Length: 411
Image (cartoon, rainbow, N blue to C red; front, side):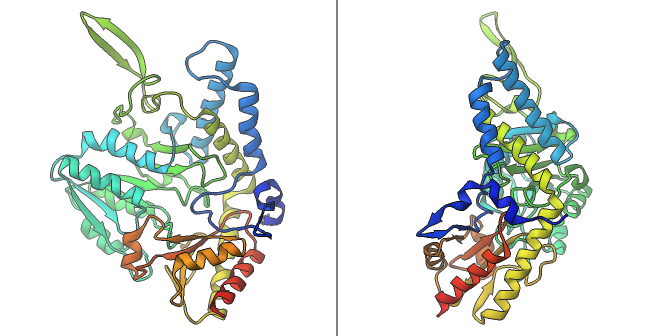
């Protein structure tokens, strides 16, 4: 059954808000998504009825909170088809997840002279941790190129990955161009050379079916706030093969089984992953909210979400082609292997000025480099771009409103 955004919108109270007297048109979903009442109420209910710390108490509230937190882990594991719930580590966001791989795995496994392969299309969060790791471990960074439309060069990838490559970090979907990379193929190429693969799934997991076991990557990171969940909760998937190679980065409560005073010193028995990687009191309510968000997305259907976003992107690209001669797209001109993201500039207008004008019309978009400045510069967008990004509650009518507002800018 096709997705009906008009029905879905009823679950999102913020979409009834007016900005400057106009009903908001929210097209900044690649940055963060809005939250349905089901998620808001699940968090509210937790704090009203179940709030307690987890894994420590023997009282009823602690048992309930622990059960909810671990049920959330099981729900997320099932959502991406992880081997088991223990392959899921809860973090704050994609950025923390990627840094966790760098510090908990990379510091102990990347050696001087090893190569780390990235693509130029990476979000800074999937670029800077590896650059920092390379500095600390005296490793070599190699950058894979893209074509003029922002598509990954597989030929360059195969050339850059060598027997010295220890790690390959790749985005599943570009947050600038919407290009969807064949991460299963990238993983297959990398594994032939014995490299470990990290996938940034921040833009893909919320918008399309993702099967981590089918992809075969060692690590995948994504954020709850981009998939209808609350801020401050994210996920790092760690494959079975890598799980026991992870080391404790943050220490403290929750990451140990026992601590003893022995012969004038301290003896520590560490916990097993994933709890080894979740020091301190976690975002329990965030995990509960994320679980409800996953349930909501499942009820809508990821295949339906994907089809809906393709329809919106196609409609916008068709309107752009019909209405503007001076619009420049950042990314492919077609919708094949492209997500619900369209970045562009119009004439000589500054991207920020365009976004400010659109805001005055009640339309929320993103402007700038979107934390992917190297890709913008590679594609010739030296001042950045305007980004419209879609989700389940966006409509064809909203796309038309965007186009009409842009026409007023040109006029």
